Length: 142
Image (cartoon, rainbow, N blue to C red; front, side, top):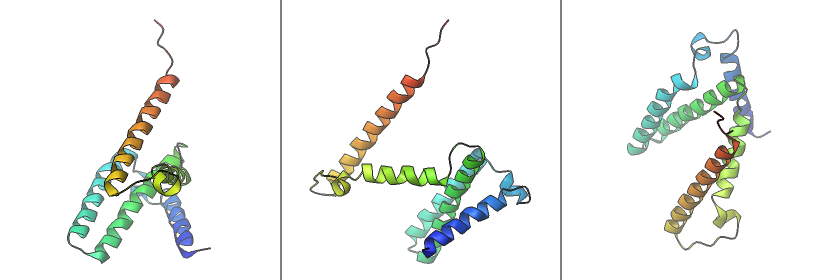
């Protein structure tokens, strides 16, 4: 097994332990809502590390962002909503879908074309998602 896979597996195990019966009281008490401000705080620290061209700090701060993703995924798993595998699968699909110039036959001339295409695809996906949600809603009968 590749080292990054071993380390990722270890990370998932650590979070499972932290949130377990005998884990950390603070970690067990966290919710999606309680963690949101930390996510924004960590993103700001990444921004500062980039601005300061501090590569060592950037590595650490990116780890803190990753921690937030894994933390939220662990909470979702416990709530039987989704897990980290689902997060990764959706991200993989999105990256392929949003890069038809790499994984498909779409042709682009420059980076601006890619940005325009990305935004159009994003809007199209948003509209499709809204249509699906509207179809799932049952009419209100009075």
